[in-house]
Amino acid sequence: MNSELIDQLSGSLGANGLPYTIPIHPNLVHLTIGLFIIGMTFDIVGVLFPFEKWVFKFLAITVERDNLFNVGWYNMLAASIITFFTVAAGFYEMLLATPPADMKSAWGLQAMETMLWHGVGGVFLLALIVVLTIWRGWQRFVWAKQEYKQTDREVQWIYLLAGIAIMFILYVHGTLGAQMAAEFGVHNTADNLLRSHQDLNTILK
Image (cartoon, rainbow, N blue to C red):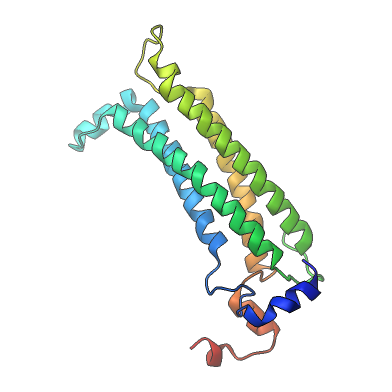
C-alpha cells in the first residue's frame, strides 16, 4: 500500500502495524486449516471404517460410520464459511503491511512477490474449498442416497484425493504466509520494534 496513506493511519496503528493488538488473519488461517484437516481426516477414517472396525472394537470405542461422515461434513462446511473471513482479514492486513524492500525469502522471493502470491493463493484456495464443500454436499445429499449404491460409504475416493491435494497446496500457501511474518516481519510486533531501534524489554514488559 502507498506509504503516504499508511502514514495517515500511523497514529492509530500499534507496534505490529495494525489497529489492534493481535493479527486476526493468522488465527483464522489456523482455524481454516484445522477444520479442513479434521473434515478430511474423518472422511478418510469413515471410508476405511470396514478395515478399522476391529481397532475401535479392541479399544472399546463405540463408533458409527455415519457419525464419522457427519464430523467430516460439518467441519468441511465450517471451513468453507470461515475461509471467507480468513481471506478478507488477510487482504485487510496485507494492505496495511510495510515490509522491507531489500530482502528476499528463503524461496528467493521479495516481500511484494510473496504477498502477491499469498493473496492470489488465498483466493484460489477459497474457491477450491468452496467447490470441495459443494461436492461434499452433493455426495452427502444426492450420491449417497442413490438406489443403485451398494455401500454406506458417503464420499468417493476421488474426493479424498482432491482433498489431500488441497492439503499440499495449503502447506505451500501457509509457508508463504509464515515467511511474511518470520522473514519479512509483516505485522510482527517484536520485529517492527527492533527495526525502529526500540527497547523490547521496556515496551513489551
